[in-house]
Amino acid sequence: MLVIVLSGVLLVVLGGCACVVRASRGGPRWARAVATATLTAGELVRVVRPRGSGSGDTTNGSDAGGTAE
Image (cartoon, rainbow, N blue to C red):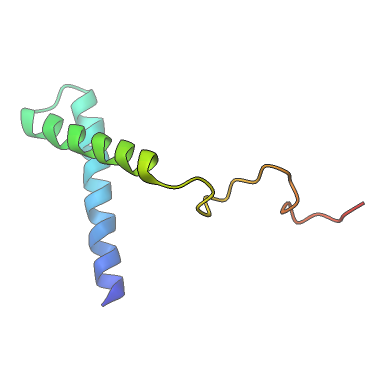
């Protein structure tokens, strides 16, 4: 069941990205509307996401996986 839900989310995201590309090339009005919604949702996720929420960014390099000297 989880795979079906995640597949649906992936399809929605890919469709939104395709509309952003199509709208940037002067696509139809509905593609521009979907592109606007997609970009707005992306900005909201970026703003709402708390800092250090496991994004993989390291600031001190201690998680680089190398040997400590």
